[in-house]
Image (cartoon, rainbow, N blue to C red; front, side, top):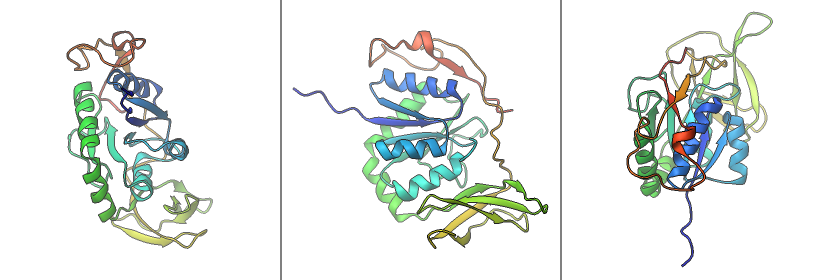
Length: 240
């Protein structure tokens, strides 16, 4: 009989150690894993392969997870998404994060991650229908000030994926705003998150752990040449 098709998972995180932990944990369950270091890198990977599930960090340089997940929701509505971060204490998806589930680094173990991935794959058709019926704004951090001291943001168009600057005159509570893309005239809906920065905070530290420590039970599955005991790391909560 032909071997069953493997499900593909895209892991997006600017911390190499975090990517390694997720990759090895998922590979033990027989998943094919692709990794990317930020939102732009992930979009390039999506040109070659569309995975069933994306696991994305939120605070990343160049293109944050907030903005990346908004692009994914618009251009790839069939993909289910797990947002991951150590900056939120709740296991519920943070407000404004365009994801189907949330993984709290330092709190949730590998078993939680694996069960969430399996659940999203099982309900992928339902998730896709929900995505198509929802309208998702782009989340954008304030980037700083220009040479005249005026605050500005950089918006990436959700249609043509080209970026352009936009001045910000006031800092108000998050609300959905609209602007026309300078390149393709697409109307971009966005929210400015003034609590975020384009610079990623110091990432979680890691120390070696065993398969039991990260919450896996039972024998390891998947390729025999990958050992979760030898390579996995514990993710600590602190995002300095």
